[in-house]
Image 1: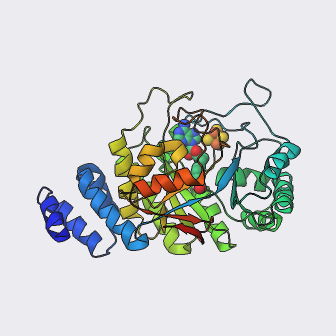
Image 2: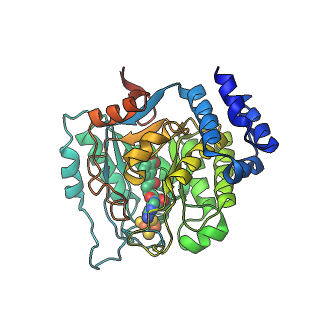
Image 3: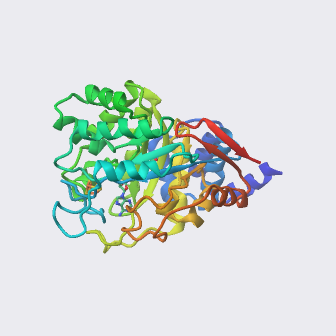
Length: 374
Ligand code: V47
Ligand code: SF4
């Protein structure tokens, strides 16, 4: 029956698309050229079937989430990426920096609560080095000894490690000693130099982003990866990005999750660009799932994409929807995302997953199962 339906759908596709689809069903890796063809020519319905095939082969109906909160220590940043809505210069209106005490007070609110992860990212503050942040990490671990600390994008790491005069490897090892457990996927944006030079010229190069993640994997820190899509890039730049990630993952196996981040246009210097449609967003999740055959997980980050598309994405290759968040991030509300106070209870997340006829699995950061909600 299922085979007949697939045949019916494939009847409407060209022979080159059918050949790619057959490769996916045979568990063969698709080439960058084939990835580009999928972006350019495949119907959304077929992409959904292929991405769902890969997703269900890896995870069945399981859909992951966690109990987490964010800390954004500062929006003061030495860089000025064109897409960034929350960056401010020191001593200007709207700039914030939480003191160590403020940060630790926030952490104390979670004593006795079943959160498993704190996600810490912010601007690249000119005066803060590795030891300043390292000290905060170790204080957090004293307050919540079992919490997993996923902290600092490669861009923040590059700066603080250099400021403290360490090599990348030594710096990451020092941070691990202070309490760092893994690295989030931010700062990747778009690796292709033609686009990177136009949207975030000054900050870490793609080579350094990849090197920092490679080194993190080497010293035992797993990480995530992102792409910022839907601004001035085209499909070939997206495929170039995915190719570089797939190659690094072949080498290290240290990435857990790939998180496509949809460009949101409010309050930044790319506001003249229209945001992508939902069809484009689903297509992007699906091609990412099909192309990144060596990434265990694809995440729809609901504070950025919205709850409805996050729910739909579960049929387009996504198996993870991030976590409870607890209204602790401003990055996306300042850039125009629908949810101005992003917060979901465990019950909300489970319901969202169950409505999509999937099985909700609470996980920790590295995908150990905490609880299955049947
Ligand atoms: O690197 C900034 C992005 C990222 C905008 O690892 C924007 O689990 C869209 O990386 N429109 C930081 N995106 C957030 C991030 C992240 C989020 C959730 C989970 C994980 C994880 C990582 O936010 C930045 C940049 O790519 N960003 N401004 C904007 N206007
Ligand atoms: Fe700074 Fe990050 Fe904003 Fe770029 S995206 S300006 S690095 S805070």
